Image (cartoon, rainbow, N blue to C red; front, side, top):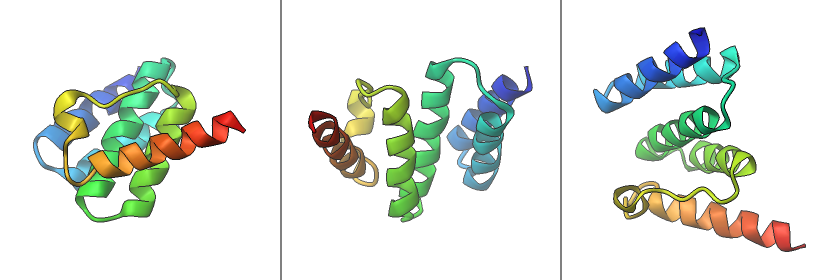
Length: 103
């Protein structure tokens, strides 16, 4: 399917450091309608990483919110959670979302 191909292409572009292309393909994957929640979570995670890496904290935090709305139990991997650009943003959004769920 086109959505899953877009996701794969977006992740490859991210890993190659081509963030502009990564944004285009990751958003394209979401726009095409990814079926699996795990794929949607992955797309939002990489979108958050790109935004955080470029200092776009508002967009970064929104992508983490989108991800946590799909999977509230999601956790970043050990190497990801300690990253200075997105680790603190993720922890902050996760705490914010947990607080909202308690209300």
